[in-house]
Length: 129
Image (cartoon, rainbow, N blue to C red; front, side, top):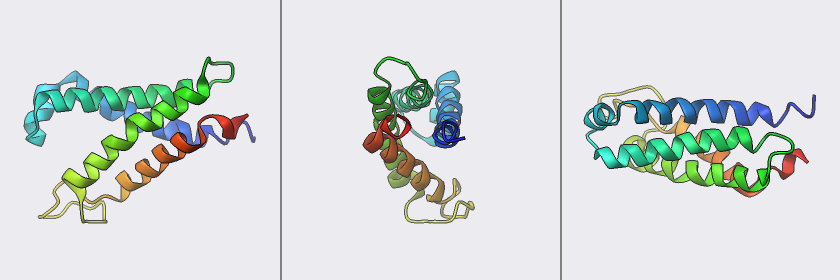
């Protein structure tokens, strides 16, 4: 059971970032228009999110080369994306429920994902050794 414990963090983290990243990369122009953002920013964020998701999975595989580094880089790719989402879209509303002033909801989910990213940066894969 202890071997499964790290995956309880890795899999949801990877799923969220892969879903959002691949969604942005599949239709960057449409996503940019919907978010009123430059297409290049959407592509860069999509790449960071996708790489963060892949890194979270690869970093958890026993025997994967440099898995500690991959895990830390995964968190490092995700953290600025979450900080940007908090600062640009969700600040200062806490509740995830959309409102008139915050149609995309508040920042509680983004803060949680940021905390996981920081956890991966700080611990790497060492917590699983």
